Length: 358
Image 1 (spheres, rainbow, N blue to C red):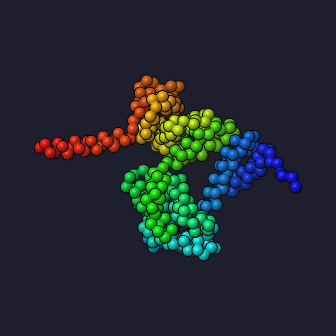
Image 2 (tube, one colour):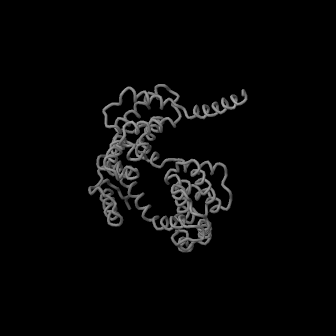
Image 3 (cartoon, rainbow, N blue to C red):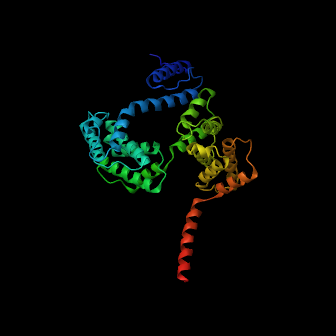
């Protein structure tokens, strides 16, 4: 029997049918025409895959969110009802692990911080939604939890960040039966402090310019996560900034990718009043870039500064930033967070020496 030969036309037609069904189920915004290239097929299929996974996982995520938000021992939903939502429910060894995790959460107080609650919900839901073979494999389950936490909202306050780390570490210990190693705790910490918006933008920057048919879809997915999404004037600015990277050619220089991702994420994550204030959004972008390690090469620093200046130009609706803004960007690119740490330590020593001299 000869091997079936797939064609773009056949696969594109099938994908359009899937998108239409998804539109009926969830209001998914389908493009309405078949994909015309492999690149477009891949992009649209990735979006559909994420949307379908989200739909499938939604019942468990919603149930876990109720559980996390409830006071200790006052869950509005029974433990066995939550466990029944798991693909692992029919496998005794796996179901026992899921039950332990749900029971432990039901006995815990609700996090006071909404961002921490979202992280805890993501971690517990990752266990509930995992297949049995993942649940019973400690390494695979830890990886699933860390991935879910990385996709959750960034926890901004240091105290809340530590609370989220402690909570996820406790969930992993319950799920695996042993205290996580220092390496795992480091992975959890990195995942909690990571910005999912920045990660998504990095992928866009590193990819070839998106086909025209999917540009709007990609932009809408990113802008939907912005606090400015519901404020038309601010959303228009965020939209323009995101479009500038979605439509651009692929960038391969790692420092440029990191800086542009940080700059765009600063716009996407900013409050609408900041987005609409040219000086404030410029400060937000340069502050985000200054948090990155400075490129060692002077030539790369110039390249990074030019790329970030283009983002600021898009965010402030100008063709080109003025020399003052470019100087601000150049200074931010050259800044090194390690120097800030040294500055803090040096300031402390200076204060101590002053006290000794009295």
